[in-house]
Length: 511
Image (cartoon, rainbow, N blue to C red; front, top):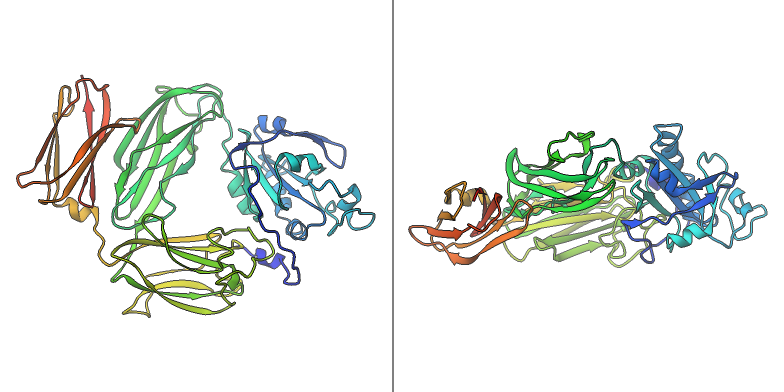
């Protein structure tokens, strides 16, 4: 948790609310060549082409939130650690974006035409650009607006974070290095939850990015669950430096706890990778807590800023079933209201205790989502806030508790009886033969009589190759025979959904 709330005195009443969308994330950054107030010229694309990450803060001298953020020294600390005097990985620019202010406003109210909250120049080690054209190109609708621009020229908006969090966001930029270099970027495991309830189908995806000077033409990518192979993709194509290709795995039915690992194991048909550090992605999952009924007790203790809290209960389809707290905050936490959120409908008082019995519609999997408008959670520097979920028959011992987070806290849980893939799998036997196969593939399934069975086959690129019709399991087993003589040679994945369980099998076609 950070201490940024100290930066915002309660006497300040101006509120910087995000009114509308600006330059969309992932857009190509508009180039600029501009002189700073000391007369030095800076060319954005020249910096990016040299491998530097660029962070720009677009503000106005009269903007109270801008002044408060500027005096937090977040940008200064970021620049000192990672700019030319630090590890030299990025550059920082402060841009005065209001065309109605004059140069004097940067130095304080004296001689200022348009308003100034203070001297922005004193103690600022990074360049200051008095350039409203940049603000116009980046489609600014509010101040301050902060962007990280990656060397691939893609731009992403940031909240007004502290120096450490700014760098954590910036370091996710792909940066070219060496001749043979591929990386995993913009990765999604298929869920924003780190707990699995029952059987959860996840389809991991990411952007395969070439960071090498040599074109990327082939890559082998493996997906594993607890060191067991789930799927192997063989990608081919042509990517120049910073070129990207979308990669998607087939749905995987996962349960219990474990590690989902994605690895680029091979590039350009055996050439070594000059930087293997960005070739691996690990996502760790734990088993979701299980409540003994569909009624769950929720207790909330707010911190000194109760109006910053908002929460939702969602089912496993993402539908919001119940919610509480400040509706003006909604699910969007983390710096959206630098001087405090508006006191919208449902706002909680400060340091209040709230009790709510959640009446869930049926046995199944659910999740609870908390957001903090400022981005420093509910605990611990500004009051010992928390949220806790209990079984109704044991309100003294919480099954789930939280409060020390930043923008968001998300927890999955089960209510009542939730089927698990491993319990069902004990009563399932699936055999594939021959393997490798050439003319026909035989599938034999032994399962609980009357269970619904459906099946899909995916090729090594994650593309659907064949879809079996839905049928019921029968006494004595179900037998499928599939002609495959015209299929390309390679590895394929059979995914069977039997009742509420999922079984994945691998086979090889060799005609």
